[in-house]
Image (tube, rainbow, N blue to C red; front, side, top):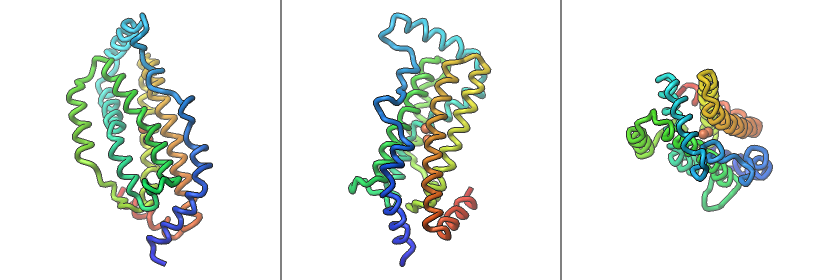
Length: 230
Ligand SMILES: [Fe+2]
Ligand SMILES: [Fe+2]
C-alpha cells in the first residue's frame, strides 16, 4: 500500500476516537474563560481607575519583557495562518466535517481568545506602538509560512506538539516575570493562556503517541525528519 494511503487509514482510525479526544482536550464554550473576564469592563464606573492602574504597572516593567510579550501576541494573532495550514493536512477534511476538522475548528476557537486578550491588554497598557505591531501582524499573516511538514499529518503533529509546548513555556515565563514585577493582572492573563497551551500540547502529544502505536516505523521517520529540520 502507498505510504499516503496508510497515513490516511491511520487518520481515519484516529478519527473514530475524536469524540472522546474533543471532550478530553477542549473545554465547553459556555463555561470557558473569555478575554473580557480578565480586562476592565468598559461599562463599569471603575473602568478608568483600572486602566490607570494597568498603565502605572506597565511603566514599571522592563523593555525586554515587553519585547517578548509583543512577540507572543503577534504569534497568537497570526492564527489564520495556522488554521488554514492545518485544514489542508492530509486526513483533515473541512468539507467532510469529520472529527479532525472539528478538532481544528475547536482548537482555533480556543486559540483565538489568546491574541484577542493580549492585544487588548497591550492597547490598554499605553506602552506599545500599536500601529507598528499591527503592521507586523499583517505582514506575518500576508507572508504565510512553511514549517517543513508539507501536508503530512505525522510531521504536522510532531511540529504542533513542540509548538504548543513552546508557547506554553513562553507565556508561563512572562507570567512569572510579570508576577515578580508586581503585575498580578498580566501574570493572570499569561498564566491562563499558558494553561490552554499545556492542554493543547497534551492533545497533540496524545495524537502523535497514537500514531506511533499504529504506524511506528513511519512515525519515527517523520519524527527524525522534523528533528533534523529543527
Ligand atoms: Fe495560543
Ligand atoms: Fe497554541
